[in-house]
Structures are given as structure tokens and as C-alpha cells.
Length: 164
Image 1 (spheres, rainbow, N blue to C red):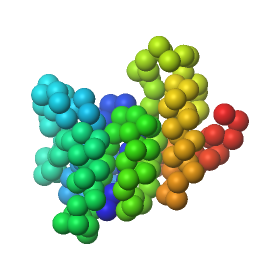
Image 2 (cartoon, rainbow, N blue to C red):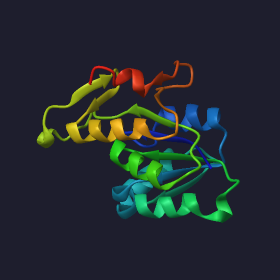
Image 3 (cartoon, rainbow, N blue to C red):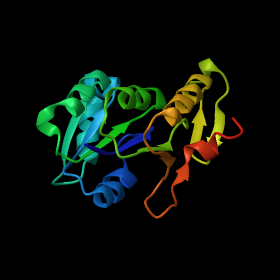
Image 4 (spheres, one colour):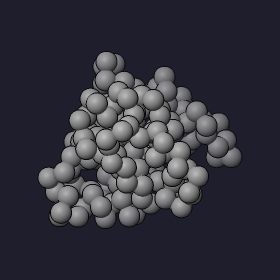
């Protein structure tokens, strides 16, 4: 079971490592990212940022979906991370047991080749295709929200998308 699927440009960083892993109390983190799965330098960086005592699994998005759907992990609580809305959508469309999707920090390092990013929330700057993916994500039967840190209130993505 995915306790939270978090979308964050930086994947694992201080807030994730120190605050969210404690808040969610999962035994480990699954990073679902094609680049991280194939880049040894990124893997080393992610391993260094992982809190002591937490397990880290780095997989491509497709391989992560296989992990999430494996019957052996059915009762295991997992904290999943990806760095773009499109990957979160693909995971959500192919994995049934997700408690919530936190679209927290996206777009600060956006590739502007697709057009000027659209500000959706205080920490959400999305390309047109990422915005379309967020709209599709919001249609699924899973809570989708923005919450940078646990002490912030959850803001419904539906509310953020009202004027977009």
C-alpha cells in the first residue's frame, strides 16, 4: 500500500528525509523515476539523503508499478516519490492501493521548451502537459492535494485547479 505518493522536483531532500518519513512512519521510500533508475550518480545522492534505518528502492516508473502491485508487498506501507505529475498519473492509473497523492513541489526547474509554466499553487509551476496530467490525476478516485510539510493544511487540487 502506498501511504503517500509525493510529487517533488527534488525527490529526497531535507523535508522528505527528516519530516515526511517520520510523519508517515513507513519502513522505506520508493523512488519511481526513470532517470534515477539509470543514473548511478543520482542513485548515490538519493542514498546519501535517505535517513538512517530507512530502506530505499529506486526503480523506473514501470518497475515501481510492478513493485507496488506485487502481492508480497500488499500489507507493506510505502512512501513513494516521483518528480513529475505525468509519472504520478501513470502510477495512479496502474496501482489501486494509494491512500493519497501529494503534489507538493513541482516546476521550479521546469523545461520551458513546452511553453511558459503556469502557476497553480505556491510551489506548483506546471507546463501545459503537466497541468493536463494534474487535471487527469484529479479525476481519479484517490485524494489529490498539495501539502508541502505536515504542519501545513492539505489544499485540495480541485480547489487549485478551479481557474486553470
